[in-house]
Length: 206
Image (cartoon, rainbow, N blue to C red):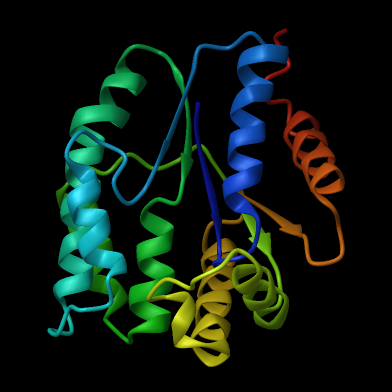
């Protein structure tokens, strides 16, 4: 099963994705792979550094790099894992690009839909969205130290990304689980994730 974790910066998705992967491996005894975007493939760190540097000038450069990174990530890591029957836990995936580039940057959705189809990007079986107010997310991000180029764009940008994610979750509601996480601690959020997953009849074979 291919599971993706999404949310604006500071939503806690990195922590929860790692916990979920460990839960699959240690408690459910699943053969599970943990990966992330951008940069989750050999050589991908170079693209990741370029993207988060904030130095790109052309309106489409960021989007092209994300799509290139995803194509290589799929070819090198995700598709081989799918073909071998492994579970995949991926922190950020194509929905991140849609939220950030369409709602955040104002690029056309239909172009990305067509590119994903032409590129044969695998569609996740399940996407878990961590919903949080931009104010709470930015406070969390600042507590970690220096902000990256996306976090530095401020509350209005983060509000657009949140709007995008919520719109995407309504576009394909059977694939998404939306977790409101602003007022919950790490353990409470994780308990809600596993409870929601199990209630859907997923990962119940062990």
